[in-house]
Length: 496
Image 1 (cartoon, rainbow, N blue to C red):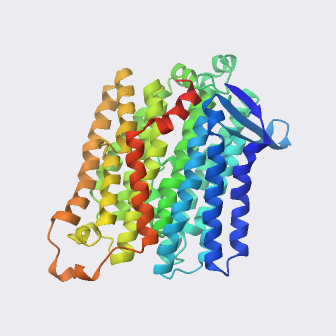
Image 2: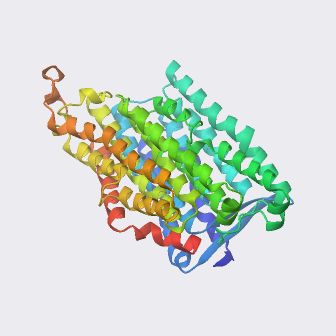
Image 3: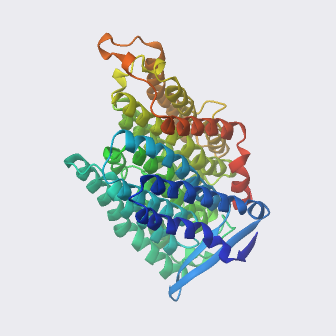
């Protein structure tokens, strides 16, 4: 691996930094305002693609933006792991913008300029988290996401919206201040640096001497990191996620697929692999407790999802469950499991955004949220429910959709490590996933409609909503057939 100092790595951040201000300046012209999001997302994704040849040849880009104090810098870097998240966020931003247009205009939502501004800042935060070269930079952008997604969760400005947003902020800002900030301070005190050792997943920030002299302090630092990264929605720090479903559906898609929870599991992955390293995780006995907690989260969240009739609530608990696949894979520290966990960051993003896009399209077209009332609706909205069905197969882990590929690697990693308990949890979750996704598809296409429902009045949502959700569902299939599209970057990142 070769680390190159290059200011070119700042371009994705510069574009996403300027985009929110351009949205404010063009706010009076809704077409121009929305065009800014399209252009900014497209340019950022194209810039990210320009780094691909070098990344795949073993180059890591790094550049110090500015130094606050000795040892405390804002430094940007791009490696294989960072590329996956830093590319997915702006790429999906393009399709989320198209979807936003149909959703926000169809429902005549208020404060649209504020909405698009905060949406754009959240993407900036996601790209910053992905490209953080040290713990301080990651913390800075992690907090930016929390602050600027609060207005999105509270968008409707009613009692339910403010309550959900308050819980959202208390959970995320509370845990980051109580746990993540002390973890960062302890890391600096123990290691003398906050910089990730880029290109090395075995040896983290802490030297062998520090680990030998202060093993319990290093363990405490790790526990504080995991507790402080509540965006990853590990139980018991998950309850903010279902409560945030009071937000408009495109915001739910942003929370679940593009920025917030992905920033959580990405940050956990970065801390485990680049902060502590697989050898430290194993030596200090941190791997299995983390994996078991993730396994418990998977099963319990899936059981709760079975009880939910509101489609967004069901999808919310599905997200809580699915995120822990990433954490199990990374925590196990076995090469196959780690690859599967990191692949699931991208695979889950495309599948879950499809599901939320589908839920929003259903609401715009029919104003239905209750799954029990969707009998026969698939025959009126075949494109929406067809895409929803493909994304559901990915969540279940059925080939050839992308979720199968990542789960296959995680399961094999658990077998390699002889972890029968985790294997059972993973297999049970597949059955539970089928239990709460298949009935939606079955009701929509195979059960007769309630005569009082008057389904003949319903049709597909606007094309600006349907096209993005169909496209993202197709991408889920492509990633299932060609898993190496993400896997090549992961292998280069970890030298697997």
